[in-house]
Picture 1 (tube, helix red, strand yellow):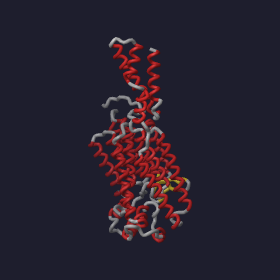
Picture 2: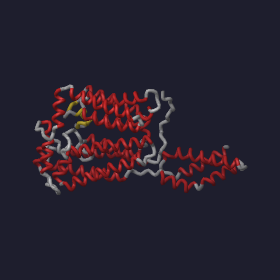
Picture 3: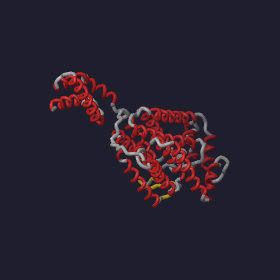
Length: 438
């Protein structure tokens, strides 16, 4: 038996020596050893000796070099190049656009702001590279820890908030970071690993909805009603991925709408503010002043751009942040703006199509979730800048000035590349226990 084990081990080692993706070595060795053992047993049943059956099994399975070469092609780690190229173009154009604002409107964007943009871009890129090299499947093992730590920290921040432009944030290197958005993304990633594991447990529906309800409650008490709506959308995606019955999904949608409705309409100020927002095209109140400014800038834009206007830069709030796409339309023209929009749509379509090629269920769900997050960010920002919706706090990924958004979105791209690079790894790193559904 010792000779048999050493021979099979030697063969599997030779195969794995040609496979650069080390994360799959263990699985391949186990699969090959099991296959060799089955073939050996067949030869023994036909009358061969143990040693002869061992040699015949190795000979039957084929040349170790060819097998290793073929498997290396299957499990070769490569990033999702289409996504990487398009996002790199966005980052480069975003830095160029922010530089044009910095050079022509120092009151809008100071030297320190632009340096922060560069630093956060470099930091986000380094984190993205680290995320790509990191085996994303390990995140699943720490889903519960991510969930509890995120909500505990968020609860502390809600209890001691820094309210800046109605966004809950903290001061970090002089910049305001949107913690509510961070909580949404981290909780979504955590629940992506938690909810499917609760499918076959007692009271699974109650447990799943309770975990989501806690997140919604914390965001709600921070007065981030838009973020509540955003997380509710992601929650529906998470529930669908966890194969929950449609009636519970409908109930979740109804509950979310009821909660938002109750929160908005029980306070007179919020009620009138909501009416103003919904009537943004015909309302001239201060709440909708930015929508009026957007409309005026878009109306003055042309096909090939008007060039840089220091007047518009100086008199338009958040021109380098939430209104960056409006600035691009006016300055560089509709040709550039529509080219960007086409690239955005191509990026999103490619992401959703690529998600189908991910074999690992957790990875496919996470890939789809991140695709939805990016889709909401991009499309919401475009709709805002085209004056199709009331003004809300939204940043166009990689283009608008938002250090937090830059780091987070580059990290998400790194995770996407990590998942795609391991798209043929179907095995989960989390051991599941069979539980009876009562």
